[in-house]
Length: 259
Image 1 (cartoon, helix red, strand yellow):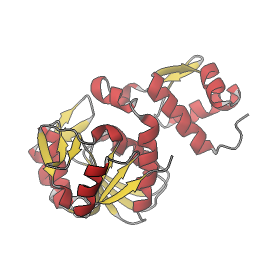
Image 2 (tube, helix red, strand yellow):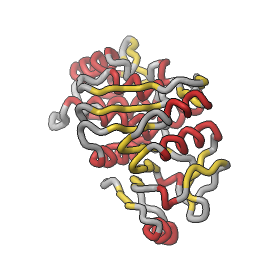
Image 3 (cartoon, one colour):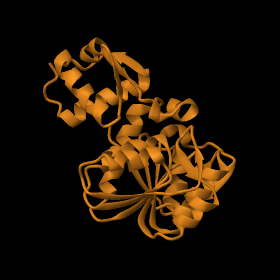
Image 4 (cartoon, one colour):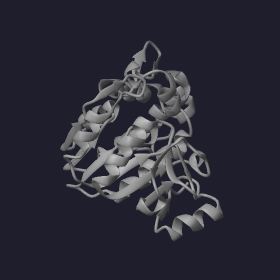
């Protein structure tokens, strides 16, 4: 039996498997993780209580609150790499700091890790991130930005959300992206999400981009910021040599999550 895993690590692995498969049985989880069925059932009960999974007889699935469509699909893409990125990014955060966090699958994984850091203030436009942090037993103050609500990825956007961002100052802006290249810098496929990210960057002391390798040397429709505005780039696999040179010349600190 895989008894060396801590309960939190074990439960994190269970959630990640369910995200990739959408629906799994207790037996499948027990075999995949080499853990007893009784332990799996107890973990599923804990995870269901905090809303991370939805139990059914003999197994579990993603909760409906995670949303449908594109965002739910992204949660199941490159899961292992995104979790490694989130774990590494956590090292940049100190107790009592204030963070902006935008909506994204990688930032949701980051928010789950963030629940181990005490006395934070988190400002986000993601209802799912706000919910995740609010369920933590660690004392954290969470502000969910108001504005036009998008049901697929459960985020607020628009002028109301942007005006509220301007009333905060933060130590960090933790952002996901649509694309990154050497010519334009950071880009997004959504103009609404690009505007939210721009507003957060303007009010933050440092800017940390969380990006899996699928984002490098791509083009998206809307510019977010230049590379010179980025403090840290946390990635699972390094960018190519040409892009790496440009990032270093721009003063970006490259942080690669270990395998």
